[in-house]
Image (tube, rainbow, N blue to C red; front, side):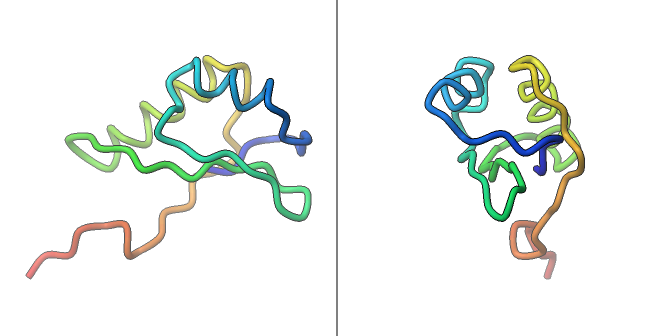
Length: 77
């Protein structure tokens, strides 16, 4: 998930995200882009994305967009 704004990642921000339920995510910044890589299990991709967005919002941040890597999606035979 790419978050709006480009804050410097501090321990305080990481703690806020963790406390809001993003304990299965790894926050980071690269070239001014603030993002969180999630490894979340849920009944569907939509449910996982929605719950992660809810947690990020609860921490006081806004999601700019969600990027899903193809290898993260289970392939059907």
